[in-house]
Structure formats: structure tokens, C-alpha cells
Image (cartoon, rainbow, N blue to C red):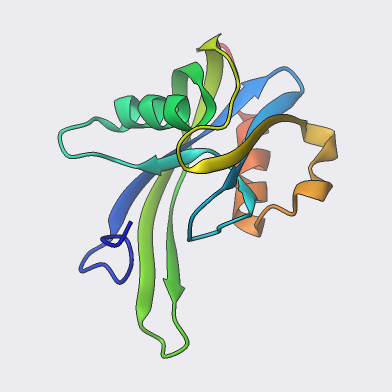
Length: 145
């Protein structure tokens, strides 16, 4: 985790909106950034790993679900600064639309909770504005891939 804090260069992260009908998977993060907040599952890309393989691995590690990786929903950066204005975290994030094809939902390594949430019942999760916008964009994408 320490290499993520005050990085010398941006870190590539991958995430996935796992959709099953009118619901999606949300996880509660154990560690910073966004510790104890509900979010879209995902993590960092490993050296030599493709984006698609990375998102499939991260989603399995965090949720126990095997997914089919679909189209990119959005690419964006998350830059968080400390009280002195120094860059504390800098991620370039690539979020994908994913469908579950196996496994059993359970909280994994960096996650304290994982659950299915209905698209029409997201308010109690207090998602960040960015997570909410990624989820909204995911709902606009076709699932016939």
C-alpha cells in the first residue's frame, strides 16, 4: 500500500461495474483512499497484465465473482492532495462494464463488505459523485457483447 501513497508517477487502476439485471455489485473498501466507503470494485494493474485481465483478476479477488469483461465505461483520473497541496494519491482509472459468469459473491482481500445493490436503491450507499456517474454511464451501454 505504501507505494500508492505519495507516488512518483500515476498508478493505473481498473474497476468494473458488475451488472445482473436491475442490480450491480458494490463493495466497501478497507483501505485508503476511500476507506470505509462504498464503491465500484477494482484495484491496481500489475506489470505485464492486460487491462481486461487485470479487471477480471481484481473483481474476482474483491468479490469472488468470475466476470466477462465488456466495454470500457470511462477513463478518468483521481488525484487526491494532502493539506499541504502535495499529491497524496494519483490514479488513472479504467472502468469496464462486466457480467457475472461464475463464483459466489463474498468480500475479498481489500474489502470489508460486498453486496448486490439495486440501481434504484443506491442512495444509502453514499457513493462518490464519480462512482455514481460511472454507474449511470454503465446503464446506458448495451449488454449484447
